[in-house]
Length: 120
Length: 108
Image (cartoon, rainbow over all chains, first blue to last red; front, side):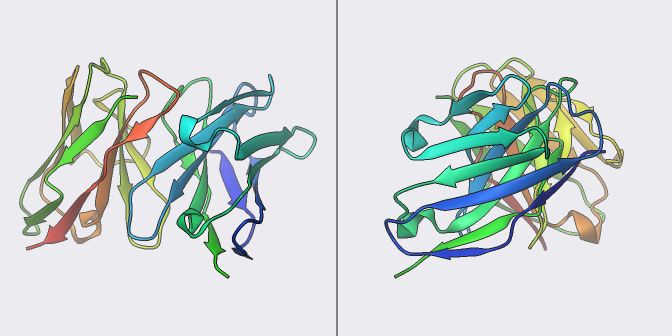
């Protein structure tokens, strides 16, 4: 069973950037994908993008293109989400979510979530 | 982008009864559909993938059906821990992966 542990809550000013981490442990870590899904207060789930660390291949949702970067450090099994030009609308819980080669496309493990608050 | 629409937005059901939740895709997603449960203050939990297959550890009272554009999640004999928000997600045509807006299952 894969276990995902995310970094702690962040408070940011409008216009700044945030970088959230997700450490992966357990299970089969080859050919897996880590994705980022956010949830604004009281709202639904929104996929932002993902990475396959083995191949350093990334995909991003169109609406975040140019503002989001997902990277991976294979030596520490840690994936990062960086979001720039933050606005109040980026206040949300950010989840990392895993799928492996045996589960392509559905997210069978989730991190605990990282609350990012954007406020002046 | 494939749009996923769930209905109803809120469903009120009594404990012990059956609940039926619907999810519609704006175009065919074949059987490439998953269902998640999210309890208050928790991360989503995978329930169903490939439209009909229960994830490991998911009770048999949860069942999924459908293909193409119309999908259903059924929960028989509702338990107190089943009252939560449920999301469908397509993974047929991506990026992006897309979710429905959720159905809140509440106690009647």
